[in-house]
Image 1 (cartoon, rainbow, N blue to C red):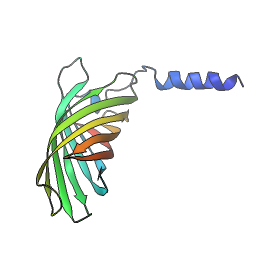
Image 2 (cartoon, rainbow, N blue to C red):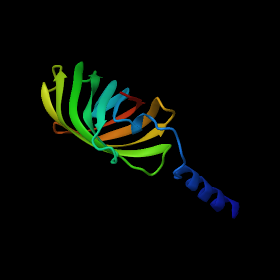
Image 3 (cartoon, helix red, strand yellow):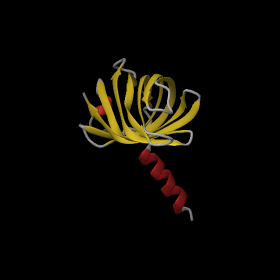
Image 4 (cartoon, rainbow, N blue to C red):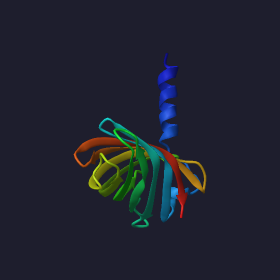
Length: 165
């Protein structure tokens, strides 16, 4: 019975240790995040592709400034194409070198084409997530953005890859 708490503590120490690793794309000055995503706003679900381009603002601080965009297709109540263009800022927490928590904020315009959507609307997203270092060339990330599009509450889960620019 005493083995389980010791094994759990060893697992926590291993996961949150500051072990050395190769510098991944997240340590780069400029990065691009790309991957499939779903935009869920009210009762409408829109699959699509999310892309974000970000640049590190200061060499010593893990704060990135960039543009969060993509293209989403909403099929209900009619076909709509949604393209957000959100200036964003995000912070990479230095808890772990292999699995890094991130927290971002984006707000800006969203363009939409379709009969049941406004052409120009406002979107604000709070984006918690994680980045997992694979190697020098690529990180994997998972994030779930929460926020509003116009007056509709929405969320947008995304899984993708991060590359150096």
